[in-house]
Image (cartoon, rainbow, N blue to C red; front, side):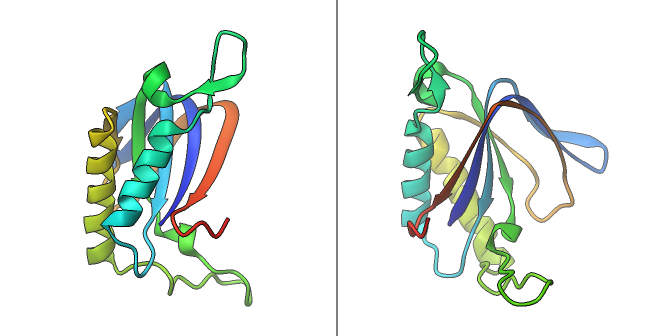
Length: 149
């Protein structure tokens, strides 16, 4: 399971002109589910993200997590995080989980984040989404539950 985590001032996601999720200050998490991922991957990433110390303290140092600082999380499913571009110019997505499995694990991941005491908004799985966000910093962190990077 892979995640791109971005610290934001605000973010929203729309589908067919309708806002389906929005947050004020917090995190946007783009989540890709890979073949072979399991609920253990959901737990690992949810705990990691909830505890990431990427918010500034009173001295301007990144010492606070979203649990300490407060804020919400907007989760967006993004299978393209498993795009393999090592050969040619067209990405291969064979490492991404099939949609039925991915949706189940995406929902489980969001449940685990909520279990960390966080307020979570989401996009719509499988839909063409438009995401608007105002990055803060910018701060962008890449995570992989298999710790490949």
